[in-house]
Length: 496
Ligand SMILES: [Zn+2]
Image 1 (cartoon, rainbow, N blue to C red):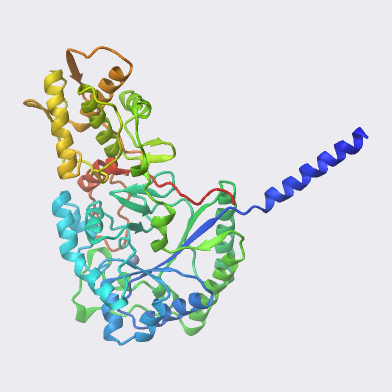
Image 2 (image 1 turned 45 degrees about the vertical axis):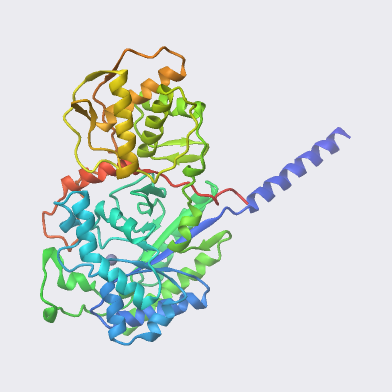
């Protein structure tokens, strides 16, 4: 009898294990195409064929299109191509892509505000043309090559483009989706798959890469895979811009050369490789092809739903005062350091006024400082000045929507990092019931975003850059916007 029960129990366990194995965690596949070759007319055919094939397969992809490419499609009267794109999602990929200078170059000597303006001056018209020609406001943007710059994010905000979609190394949060510069950023994703289109060997590699990513994500409750191509690479032997703009070259339009093409067999092989790959991906349970336009609903920023009371503020303040100057999390919702700054300064002001700490994030994510901090000094100040400085900082956060470059404690300027840590310590002391201090000491502290935002080394290997191009000051500016960085939390990853 006992034995029979044991057998029954083991059988039930075995069934449970089987059932558990059949649960397929959701995997979102972002399939995107940088659609940029406006020189080789055959690249229009490739775009048409890919868009139509995907429609037949009931797959929606994101086509990030160059402004000049959209205008060329209009000039060539390719209503068939534009019609085929209607089924898909449209993103933006600069106005001219590789004509010199490209974004990282012209942004590299500029500060934040000048950079935002310059990017808009050069790129906004292309976005408007793309919108007019395709009938879609772009869902996303991504840079040409590795020509990335932080000021792009300021312009995207102004243009109402909510997603950054590309592959690159400039910012990285453990290979996961992130918020940076108020923009949902799908960039240095761990599972970014890039394979060639040369037939069986490439297809096998692509399948193996996909399966490995899929298995990894199954073990994590689901996740995303980013796969990208360029329509032109289905028909050319060499990229259109490599033929014309390599190493900083910038010939006039009348001297642009057509890139060499593949022969007819190689072109067919490219299509069949890709088509087999897409059909293979579709066989995996739990896989959904997803466009950039759907991404904001998958990764909503829910921080503004938080009601933040004294317990949460004390926890935040303890982490910050102990030197953990980075994004934080409350109840599964993430807060950038600039958001934490706003909350702690607000809490300190309330504690001085003996009002209850009952806060919400009622402003947009403040930008990071635009300029380098003042030189490090230690300042000691009384409660009256501290209170007036808190009010000044809050006013700056609300009216300028950014963390100030310098916090003025009377006639002395300290970095916002230093002021944040001193404020956090003040909040901890108040909430732990210590008597208000006579003097408040502010000593030099620096938030370090170097684990997430690269320095200049090795970022500029794109063949279109002139040899020796670098942008160390721009990457410093990028790091100052580390104040806006935080993980993007998926709403859909629970096992179903
Ligand atoms: Zn491109």
